[in-house]
Length: 259
Ligand code: 13P
Image (cartoon, rainbow, N blue to C red; front, side, top):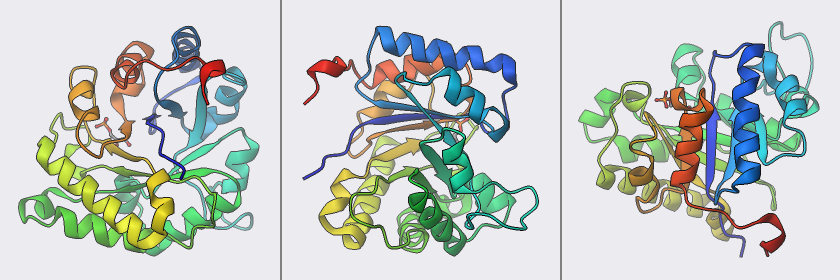
């Protein structure tokens, strides 16, 4: 049975000009010298995707998009398709981020259609779920993320890679994080929802935590039961901070020693 590999992914959001590519290069060089236990990805703005993919080609860092359209091509001014992301060198794509669910009105059904398109294009989707502060305070986190998982996944063909990120909306960019018990409870609920949906294949799906992950709290967050990695916003913009988080996932095994 395929087991899930730890994954640390940086989401640059709407940050980064060409000058920022040196940070991505620094991460790649550091990881080449010092392999990590986790798969590492960086998701820059679309304008940098092709350049970042070229700069990091052949290295240990995967590159990804932050969204895609559900259609492969057509009259959708301003949008980018999954096939275009893959063509630009992307291997990953973040979908259903709360900033798109809230800011762009994306529904679970919209996210499911995008996940289908991403899989079709050969990308690994990172599907984001998470409750708002009001839902958290009402004790609804498990119910909300369970509903989001059930609604945001299309049929997943066997053998396709998929990841999920639990990002409580109120923890993003706020410096706040849920307690370890709260994170463990939600991750267990996500794992159960994935198992109901995907059966045994669910064991291969890493469930990342996201929301104010930084070098100081990464080691604690990454050892919580059921946390298979992190989706990192602000702290992924600087190579030094991002590397500190990656190191918190533990040392890696040299590529030629992996089974
Ligand atoms: P921060 O790490 O800046 O809180 O952002 C988290 C996030 O939204 C990653 O997708």
